[in-house]
Length: 199
Image 1 (tube, rainbow, N blue to C red):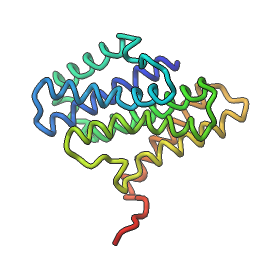
Image 2: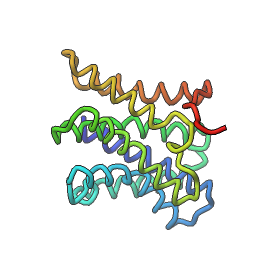
Image 3: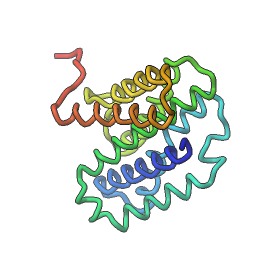
Image 4: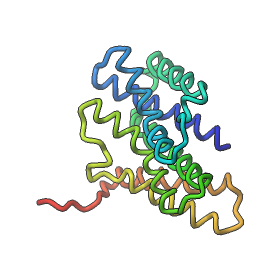
């Protein structure tokens, strides 16, 4: 289950990266690089922070194949994916949900405090997008007032509340992941944003 979630997160973030690269009119190499950093950037930072080296995608070549395959798929079927164009938002939202859970589980397995686990989940989910946005000359979404990292934190809190009860792990993952997706979707739909400190 855990490995499957990791693969699904990699696929959705890689596709999200390809769509951004298309918007920026990058060449093929640029598209592949953006797909790669979006998919594995957050996980790489997480692994470095907890001393899990070589980082996961270096130890398991499957992730490289998954990123390349997802990028090629997104390039070939770009017009089809464009019809979902909730696209970038859709894939990004699913991606942060899956990666939040992956990061939290890594923290739990490392025996870390729940607050640190939630931080690791948020880093895993958000920082691939941060690196992507910086490379694409954009202000990263999590540094703007959009609800993004906050949705990851809410999902993490729900995860740790639920594991206090005799609930099957798969159900915990499903509910916590749904909280991340729902929080993000509702925030965008109803234009809910964090307060700003400037005028």
